[in-house]
Amino acid sequence: MPSSTYDAIVIGTGQAGPFVANRLAKSGMKVAIVERGHFGGTCVNTGCIPTKTMVASAYAAHLARRAADFGVGIGGSVTVDMARVKARKDEISGQSRSGVEAGLRKTENCTVYQGHARFESARVVTVGSDRLTAERIFINVGGRALVPDMPGLADVPFLTNSSMMGVDFIPEHLVIVGGSYIGLEFGQMFRRFGSRVTIVEMADRLIRREDEDVSAAVLDILQGEGIDVRLNAKCISLSRQGTNIVAGVDCTDGSPEVTGTHLLLAVGRRPNTDDLGLEHAGVKVNQQGYIEVDDELRTSVPGIWALGDCNGRGAFTHTSFNDAEIVVANLLENDTRRVSDRIPVYGLFVDPPLGRVGMTDAEVRATGRPALVGKRAMKDVKRAVEKGETQGFIKVVVDAGTNQILGAAILGTGGDEVVHSILDVMYAKSPYTLIKRAVHIHPTVSELVPTTLWSLKPL
Ligand SMILES: Cc1cc2nc3c(=O)[nH]c(=O)nc-3n(C[C@H](O)[C@H](O)[C@H](O)COP(=O)(O)OP(=O)(O)OC[C@H]3O[C@@H](n4cnc5c(N)ncnc54)[C@H](O)[C@@H]3O)c2cc1C
Image (cartoon, rainbow, N blue to C red; front, top):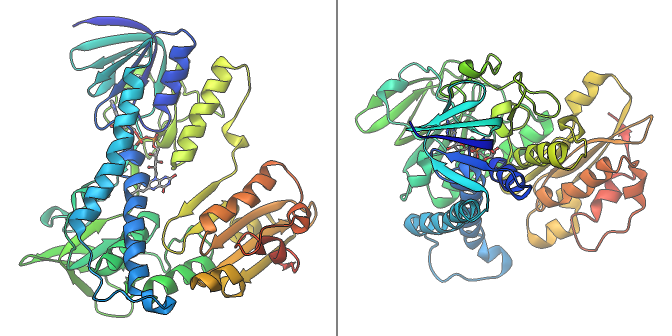
């Protein structure tokens, strides 16, 4: 077995690995980076980039169907060419993938290995017939779709976020099991492409990690577009009926079965830590397989770090990239950065999108601290009215004692961007009164954030 010694080995080329490899190599270390699949990982190939590219196509179709509302004639019916939607998605995703690979290959001091990496010991990793040794190892192996042990699943064909990337046709009736972030994004986009869509969710509401008003407003938006949503589906089972798939949903109301032509499973993610040989290195994982790390992303074994989705401390591209920044700052820049410095922030890219930062109302209530909330409907936001996109609301929660912003949800046009003005004030640890006095551009959605803070009420 050919054996090579490096200063550092990076496993995985997701959102953290390439940055770490690049920075270590630039500092003069001899680095190896290993990728078993597509360069760029989930975000680039089967996650954020392709899905948001497809969301953009779906938005174009939606707007075209609404053209008459704006006084615009299309002169015929609106059709969606799914092969072209996919080709556009493949091109945009492909550019990022080749950019990541090219960037790594041209990095001086960095050797790229293609294959599945496994720990042989705390300092040795094998990749096919290669044996790599290093004093520092960085794990950025990400995750994949969770395929639960659901009755009947073995007997039916199903799609996941990865295989959805190959879909170049419009399913007649797409049944989606899972009413959370990934399921909702795919659900709305395929409805807009022309599929009949049913979303089946076990809980009594969609995106149950969000506040009830957010779940209710998103449900309203999706149902308004003709998406069937089946909540309280406690015992989901699957079977075949000819070429169709039948989902037994056992709902408290409505038909006990949904029959569709295609099935998408969107019930969560699991970390790619099960075939990594972590036991040979002594790296501890929790019950769900996530690698245990401290606040600086060190695992239980000195000299081994875990970054990105596989450490369970974040599930987003920006959290994975921030993990890389934290590790690089601590190792190379004498700048102590920690995961706990990070304020939770993310988007749900249905249309209109949800921008979320900090705590939910429920989380704030659980702390028992006195809090105030400001809320404004998007129909009272002039820019939203002008754009004809008035669904949703702006909501900001502040600490009644310290005046610090505790959390916000902006569901509405531009919500995924506007939320950053709140995020930055939270990072500055400034009081909400700073935004209240700020003058924002008219007419924008951001303009109404200060106004929302004028009339705070007890939460
Ligand atoms: C459908 C979908 C939509 C999403 N949309 C968003 C979004 O809009 N915004 C957002 O912030 N996040 C989004 N995410 C989440 C985001 O994609 C991930 O959080 C992000 O990719 C971070 O992943 P990572 O760096 O941990 O690893 P990944 O990107 O998963 O990369 C891990 C890499 O490691 C490789 N690997 C794994 N095991 C081995 C091994 N043993 N040897 C060698 N290589 C290995 C894999 O092949 C992969 O390339 C989405 C996810 C999905 C599924």
